Image 1 (cartoon, one colour):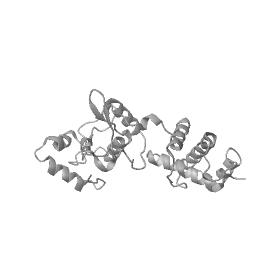
Image 2: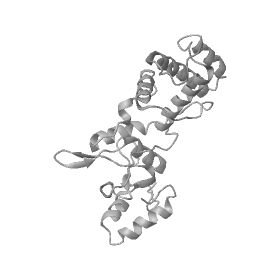
Image 3: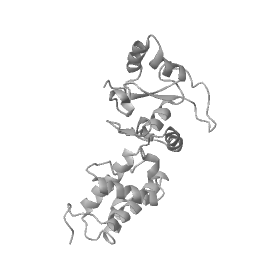
Image 4: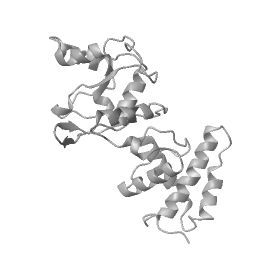
Length: 237
């Protein structure tokens, strides 16, 4: 007999779901046939014996939603569906990490520029398959100096999306870093201190000259307005 869909899933059930999901994802990546119904039955013959086929399907779509939020590849036959509770999401991420799909800490917001850069470098090694949600209202961290927590995934996406080309002047990055990445700086069009978001819709990759131009030039306001015209993903805040 199956349980009701609103009954809380156990960690064991979530672990089994993530394990099977990653097996299916690997099959899809390698171009092998993927029989979703067969894996659904496999789960219900085992750890998910009390769940209905539909509830298993929905949970798989939840896992896709977690991966999509992190800009990671998800199974095409399981389009992302939200409504993933905070605790359930954290548990799923833990099991995804255990399965080698991600490192949770790489996605944690940070106030340290050094730590942010280290995380960005790791995330940029991935093929970011979607647009991160970012942080709508960045939190100011108060220590000796006041700084904002930054989302490393947003910065990685902005730099990867720019493909080494300044989104201000259109010129290539002026040089490459030691790890081979083209050097561009991420600029928040509406500053964080002016309650701008740390989202892809409020950030651009700029060469150092264009970045300084936004902050210091006598035509900084005009140049900033031109960024919205050049980059259609930007949204005025």
